[in-house]
Image (tube, rainbow, N blue to C red; front, side):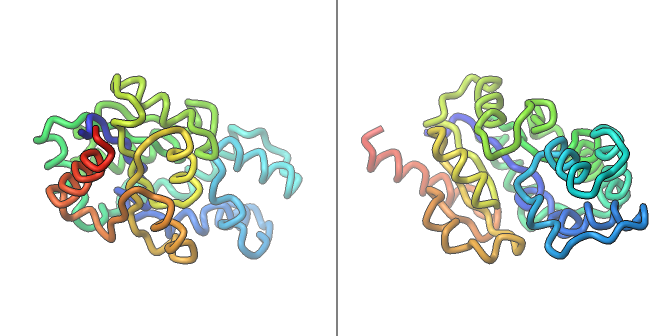
Length: 226
């Protein structure tokens, strides 16, 4: 049975991936620097500190990592504070999870203050027992540290903990660490959609059918003899 759930935020709960496609480019442009083509894709799997270090080295920025992170956050914060919306069905899905007594945490590559402001405005922050960030954990989602920290906080084993992610690399990381995975569709991952479906344990086009998901999860455990 599912005892704990770890939710990615950008692209899974929040409809926010569009701003990240251009965040680094917008930051560089604000300083009169022309960004290379496809910069967003190059930085896709990086944590904020990793991305800041990359930009510092790649573009010879005379700034420390903290200044770069602050600059990027300043570029995108209005979007999170006033514009970002939940993905279809997400609020009811979280509510159903909570009512079922399933513990929930969030695991995000974004910095805490921007996602917390968004979740507060959208009235869903209280569904999560705690929010974990890659910056604070010290590793991006190419490593399982953030998932292990979230599961440890909830007191749940990886085999009983389901990670909800939209990105292929993050799904692979969680799965390789022994977690169960739910792939959630986001248009930003369309190039990898077939690999996502093949890699995750269960794939959802939307977070709109909690009871249907629980049936699928229970069937998997039954088939495994758990």
